[in-house]
Each structure stands twice: as C-alpha cells, then as structure tokens.
Length: 94
Image (cartoon, rainbow, N blue to C red; front, side):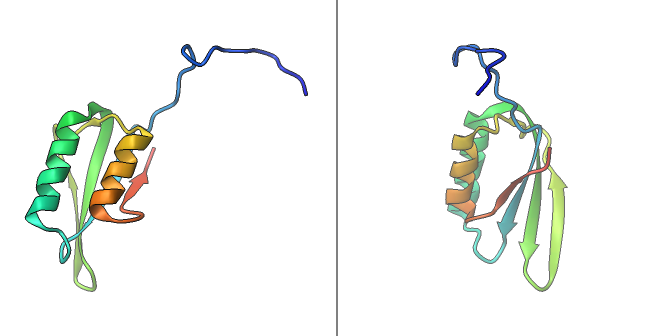
C-alpha cells in the first residue's frame, strides 16, 4: 500500500452531479407527491440542472427542463426523490 497524499475529510471536495433526470410516472403521481417534490427542490437549491421525464407508460414521455429548479444533488436529496417517486426514478446525467 502506497499513499501519495492525505487530505483531511473536512477539506476533501466531493464531485457533485451537475445534471439529473427525475422520472415521474403520471398514473401514480398524486398532487401530494408533486407538492412534496416542489418543497424538496425549494429546500435543496444548488447548481445541478434538473430534467423531468413525465411518463404515461405505453403512451408517451414528455421531457421538461425546469428553470429555477437547480439543486444540490447530494445523496440525501437523491434518496428523498426516490422515496417520493419510486426506486430508480432519479438518474445522474453528468
């Protein structure tokens, strides 16, 4: 084991995602879910761009880029979106 450099955890910088895609299944999307997502996005303002896939399975998918919905895409945020929209509902693009 060779160590070239040691960085204290409080100085280490984590590369955060710059773009995300959130998939919302329209048949299951309740008004409460949309309200909860809006609140989450409002509390998590940051630099990552967000695209929304509005999906009606077997019929269509609409892709929307929402202005003003840039977020801090940390693990807690990603986990919260999956709790609201289901497993695999959020993907890191970049």
